[in-house]
Length: 120
Figure 1 (tube, rainbow, N blue to C red):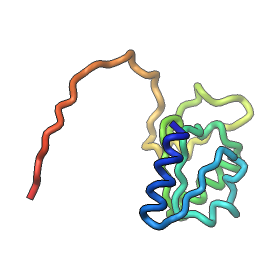
Figure 2 (figure 1 turned 30 degrees about the horizontal axis):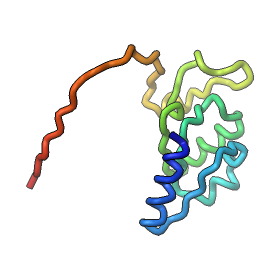
Figure 3 (figure 1 turned 120 degrees about the horizontal axis):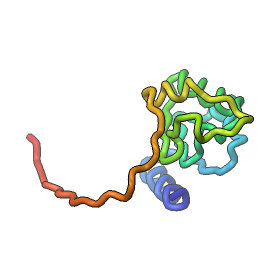
Figure 4 (figure 1 turned 90 degrees about the vertical axis):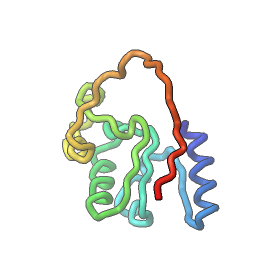
């Protein structure tokens, strides 16, 4: 997912005249570095995988009105995932609407009907 997302982000950046930095280096989540950006796209990095200082920097970034987009595990909440070395980030749970992750249901099957609807 991350490899394909990187290519897609770089493509839309080229097409829309903005820059994107894709990295797996979580040490870049700090006040000084985040000050350069308008939006933070978090791909699969769970909030409990960040250090408390990284969490604090991202929290300040969002509170200041900057954008945040979380993909997959980036939105996980709940204490069942975190290790003992990182305190639970209650602020992030509130950002996610107060939801707590519950286990995935068993595989679901279904049919998707796509209709071409034109609204005037």
